[in-house]
Amino acid sequence: MKKSIIYIALIIMAFGTTSCFKNFEDMQVNPNYPTDVDPGSLFANATFSRIGGIYGVQAEDFNLTGAGLWAQQFAKIQYIDEDWYEYRSNVVDGYWKYMYSGSSSNGSGSLYELELALKKTQDLKEALMAEANRDEKAIADAEAMEGAMLVVRSYLFSVMTDVWGDIPYSEALKTVALGYESTITQPKYDAQKDIYTDLFNRLSEANELLSHGGNVDTQADMIYGGDTQKWQKFANSLAARLYIHISKVDQATAQSGLELIFANPAKYPVFTSIEDDAMLTYAGTQPYEHPFFENYVRDARDDHAMSYTMVNMMKDRKDARMYIYATPTPASIALFDSTGNTADISYTGIENGVPKSESFQLSAISRVGVMYRVTPNGVSHIMSYSELEFIKAEAAAILGVSAAGDAKVAYENGIHASFERQYRLADQYGIKTAAFADQTGAVTFSESVVTEEDGTAIEISLANMESHYSRTLATADVAWDASKAAQLIAEQKFISIFTNGPEAFTEVRRTNFPQLTFVRGGTQYKGLGLPLRFPYAISEQTTNGANWSQAATGITNTMYGVKVWWNTKTFDNYVEL
Image (cartoon, rainbow, N blue to C red; front, side, top):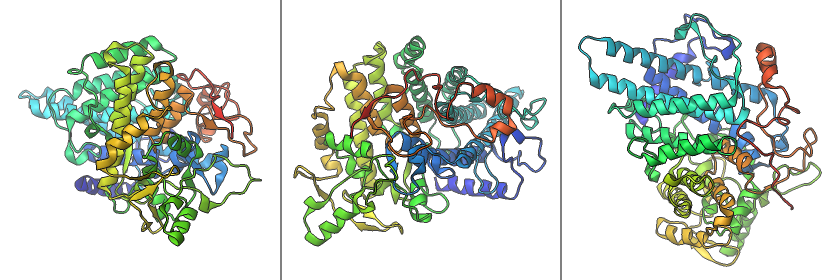
């Protein structure tokens, strides 16, 4: 990992001294663009930058003040506009541009950079195959690199199309520098259905390429450190995620795709334990630090808290993961300090989008847990074994996919895997329950034992994980009930993917679970409810107007009127406060 970070630092330095496209519509042949850079370095930089952007580094709006906020995993307590759905158009515009073409000012990579790395790798493979004395090992290694790049490319485009719907895809990133006859400066917007079809094809291709015995370059691999078999599992697990996404709009395709994957584990391996989880682990030194740490400690911001929705779900289910996800309220810590009574420690989320006329006390609200917020060498969760088990559970219980196995077993496996992952990370980082930290990153309060509201004293540790898992599984809102399978699976998946805001936003819209609080504040979109999509970048109206106009037909108030293709229902499952 450290060597990979050094690679990234070098490539960022290279980009910092060259001209870089500020918008993908402006891509032309640029003699200063570093097309001769090693594809592995390009792959590493694009992976780090774009996953960081999705998680919150280059554009915090995408998760902390966008997808994760609207899914109500988080809430805003300062500069609350986004929690009223009153987004800043320039920030959304910036994310769109960063995703496609990156930025030379901060060295961020892009989809264009990834496309360049892919093209160079494919050219290398073709050259090796054309040699009279073919080096089969070198060919297999090139194929493995190509496969890993296709997986990351598919993941990034899937996130984009899931929040925006129709986007430039088939004509995006086509430049002379990549071997095309001309550069397309105004790419068409492809239908989301067509994008999904191609993503399935690319992931199938990646699975094949990764099965030929080649090695992914360790220095270039920011996720698995060169483990080709895990990349193959990621390719097929990601395909399963996308099949479950479309299961309500194209059930037949979802069923056949999931059946094919789960019935052929030798050909289509998937995640089988938490060791397979796709995560980006940060080095922990500037500038390669966890996005939430950068926001809270480096930028000295305290804008985000835990959502009432998330905290209350976990309280109702006696879910001890809450003590990892959230911090105690500052007021309860102060009370504990004066009394020494652990029963004074409390956890309270805030309603999303509190009206301007209603005041609230910052000291009475729980923040995001220490493991995420003040751990510089933390992780960004891309996809987990836990999520894969919930996909199996839904495939079996709702879609009748026999190869998915027993729905109850998969459901309980998913919960157990989530507990195991969180407890192991907490142990790895030395995180205690009832922990709080100041904006220097220093833990100012840490108690290993928490007394819950019902008087139960518990301690988060690997030794206690099984009992905590069993306790949660036994609660009425968690225990398996086939008649409530869709709700149970959706709610537990939502809890398990905490901090993965884009996927949470997708799942909330797709499943209509969990119950959210209706955003009462704000004026611009008052009464409209959960947005159906992200707003398009405002720059598209001037630089790609004709294509943007066609894609935006029917959209009202920038985020309403037209659902994304796989979404068959406008969200309406709101709880009364």
